[in-house]
Length: 253
Ligand SMILES: [Zn+2]
Image (cartoon, rainbow, N blue to C red):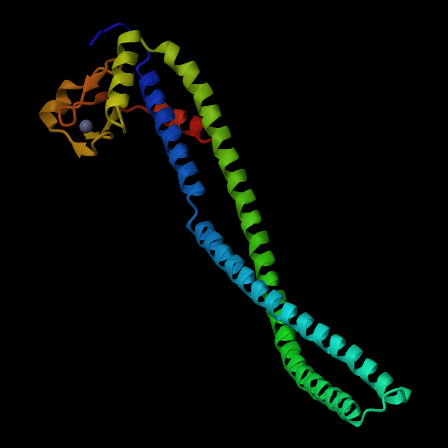
């Protein structure tokens, strides 16, 4: 690698910024893939389907009730007409009189039966109305829970996106301090293999692979201004120093 002099800490900082950006990006995915919300939406769809079904049943019964009511009305009109004829004194034929009386009697009996059925039907309709109200209540409750959860998620996502923006702005201040060949090497390695590209060596441990290098290898890594390669993972390696803590706290945003 080119040995042009630059603050090697820029590479460490770049790595830290990128690690935080990718962590925030994965946080966004996690926030968006909310399992509880998915379950709630599924439950909402189920409730909505159930409501449609019960509502359909209610309409059917209500139509049936209306048809019954119409029949009773038609029958009543007919009964009234028959009775008017019967009491008008215009009918002299005995057979016709009996027929009219019979017809009125049959219609009244039929109305009684229909009205009994209607009462039973109305009980069912009332039950369905109560059920519909309950389901609607549940649906509205779930709807408001979903909406508040979605708002919460979008708030969290927005916050994370802002943090990413801040980190990207920091990144833009870091990259100009890194020589082109180092930056290219960094970007290529980052694109090829997601994860850490630059490791920090501390107490013989490489932070990229989390492994301890041998004392012999560690002996060779002494220059604070040099970018080394980890003998174990091959990644860029920079010697730890206290200033790194400052970078970490600076990035705690
Ligand atoms: Zn390593």
